[in-house]
Length: 259
Image (tube, rainbow, N blue to C red):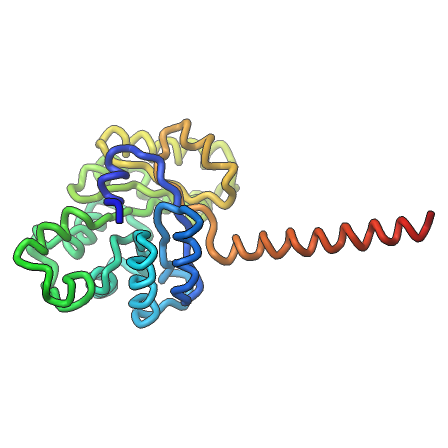
């Protein structure tokens, strides 16, 4: 499995998707599709630790990194997903540097706050050896999700927190917090300010997009990490295309009868 953190810190454009269905076979399918990573969404989907354990196993089999959008910033919500072998976390509602520091403390052993147990998949069931903690810190990815108006005035402070790898914009919640419409100039300017703060600090900038057509324009503006849609939206779009083909055939048949 390629080192996701090394690739994103090098500025490579990386694209993943949210996984909202608790089925590890979907991770295999998404890996075969050629995505760079998948984000299991514990914040907005019914993914318990048991399902996540199998999802992480499928990611290992598919050679695709699995990140987790955890439901909160609490250490209890973070350590377990790393212990089962996930590559990193996406953390919602990072509003200031204190939030970012607390998350980094929960992830990185070297900050002397995370509890240590190498007995799970993350520690090769105890066989990882004495270098496990340093290696885990080197590989683990932290994406701080910027989706609150109050965070916009503290972007440089958030980006300056060591061990935060990505400032990741959740545009829908950010628009709600700013009380502006999605796609508005105000929202676009706010996203651009997050990108600028990330790049100034030598960090990656990330963005959720609902459609692949939005990747290239934002990549041109400095975003390098994208989460595009979800397994559900991809399935829905594919099913709609099939239904549209059926409707086209029916329309053609009706028109033929009318001639």
